[in-house]
Image (tube, rainbow, N blue to C red; front, side):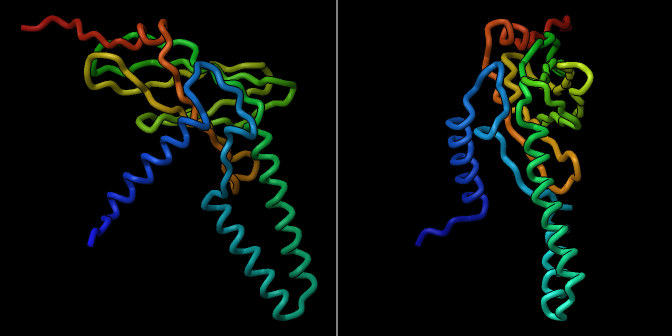
Length: 203
């Protein structure tokens, strides 16, 4: 009998998910976010909001309280509207790998990511994060684009592959999270800038 440990299941799921994600969102230097590459799910606060809605609905049905039922329906409407507005806040955003600064091994590599809007719609509270970096938040409201500098730690010499950049938003209510992963393709100029050469003198 073969028993699968949790770590084995986790590795299997990670490999499968990464393979599926690579097919769905292929590496590129520029990506426009739309319904084909945006994922959406309730946040922790969204789940608590849903529990409150269900509890109020069950209480209203049990006690025959029309006021409580009406309030629960109102909250359901807010939840649905939040889904639409959160998706629209991220949809239409154009993400581009703009510039990469060379650095020494062990220093922080500087990546500049250009965030712009593809139409007249403004985008607020757009977050960017790599797994190994702090998140940054920007707004694309008054200007058509914004440049965000991301700092990533480096440990060794050679080609540095930052991985997928997560672009996300919980605007406007914070109960729904919409996100996407931007896979940066190795570009000639980008790759040359990412080559980390340890040129410090030894001895």
